[in-house]
Image (cartoon, rainbow, N blue to C red; front, side, top):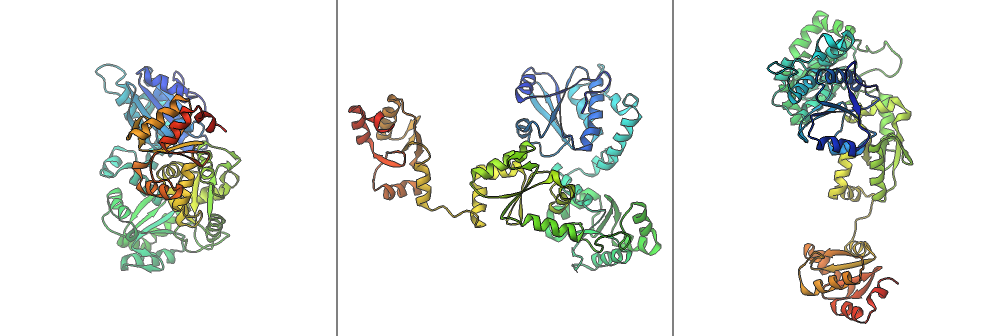
Length: 489
């Protein structure tokens, strides 16, 4: 991706240190996270470059999200394009998605008007941008509902649910939000729309709004349509049951499907008929299911475990290695049908995607958070992939976590008993590095270690998994000049 437009100045950030330095300067910064494979990123970058022309006193910066995972993680970037706005060294606003109008408004807000006393009206959304950019902007604005009216329609919904609803609506050329499913409709109106779509011989996807109250209530606000079913064609709301029936009977529905290029069953090769809930053909659906279930742990990633092609994939590979579990993987860069199809199948728009026993766990941010909280280990245990750790296993793991390991009351910086304090001081005086565990924080470990070691008091000092003893023994070894030698054999 090239630099900014004529007169514009967009700088590619090469490191986190470089960005931190600019933040510390207190200057106004606008940061664009992009990806080379994302068309929306490329189109928004044209707008971004022209905005840099209109606001020359601000710094317009660009970060390739997958090439700079450290920066992307710091600002919780999970999709591109994504924009972060800084003023006086602080994050003051963010924007996710291809919304040119919102980008221009937010830039104008953080950067201020070009001339004092004049309302900011960025040239990038006017003549200075040129017809090609304007056409792209208009297309993006239509696709994302970024007109002023559209934004007002969707008030009351947070960005996360709006994004999810849009993904569901766009997941199939013809999409029906209904009560129940096509085989078992839970209301007469839903059944009528299913029947007329079958009569129209079109492929369609469905979503059971009874299964998810967030989608059910959110879609009412999002579409400004208070009832169900709701029928969409290529992302556009057609209406409910009565409207669908009227359009079907007049022939208008068939014309809408034809004008929007919707596949009619029997007009193309391959598997026709009603699509499964994913909206994919039966062949592709079956193939994705087979891949997902090809191992207890399945990672769809960019590249291979030995050669990851993006930082996010590399991160999940490292987490799985740390958990010491075997896993299968699939390089989505090698098969575009799988890459695009899995996004629809899982309703998850980015990679990597981790599955355990056929169930989607999430992407890199979720997997990392689950590892930190212990949730990932719990799921691996519940799914029978790793053995449940016994107390004895846990104690052995703690004892072996450092060559010299001290179980004490409190911490080395804040001992909670005199005996623990004496052992800490003895080890520090001898210049011995050691790990520690505060037995006051875990009564199971505290009581279990007494039985495990057959030593009833604390502190307890271990070296390479073997018990050395308590306070008296440690002090005796130090006084005899034997402590350092004992802990370095």
